[in-house]
Length: 148
Image 1 (tube, rainbow, N blue to C red):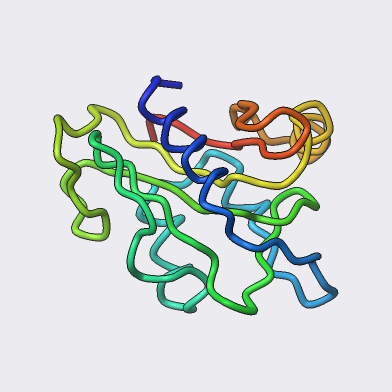
Image 2 (cartoon, rainbow, N blue to C red; image 1 turned 45 degrees about the horizontal axis):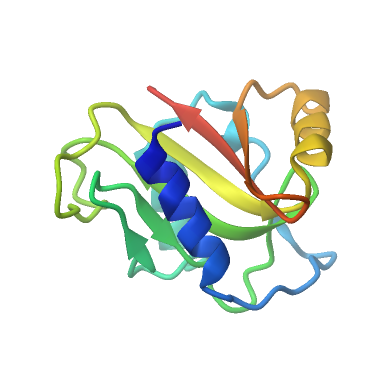
C-alpha cells in the first residue's frame, strides 16, 4: 500500500468517529470484498442505498476517497464493524479528485475495528485474497483490493 493511503487510513483513525456494535440487521460487505469487483461496483450501491455518506470525509492527494458509514447503516466486513469505506477508480465521477497526481491503479476497501491478525484470519476463512494492513495496532485494520 502506498504511503499516502496509509496516511489517509491513519487520519481516519484520528477523526474520532464513534463506534457502535454491529447488530443483527448489519449489512455485510463480505461478498464485494472478494476482490472481483471494481471500485465503482463496490461504492455505487453503498451510495445508492445511502449506507455511506455521499460526501467523502477525506480525499487523499492521490484521489483515494474515504466515506463515513451513514448513521444506522451498521456496515460489517468479515464479522467486524466498518469504520470507513474507501476507494478510487481513474476517470470515475463518483470519486472526487485530490490535489495531487491521481493514483494510476484502482483500489477499494474498508477500515474495520479489530486487530490485523483476527481480521486476516476471518478474511482468509471467507476465501478472500484481500490485502490486510494494520492502521492502528490492535484496533483498526484496512482490508482492501487493488487493480481491478
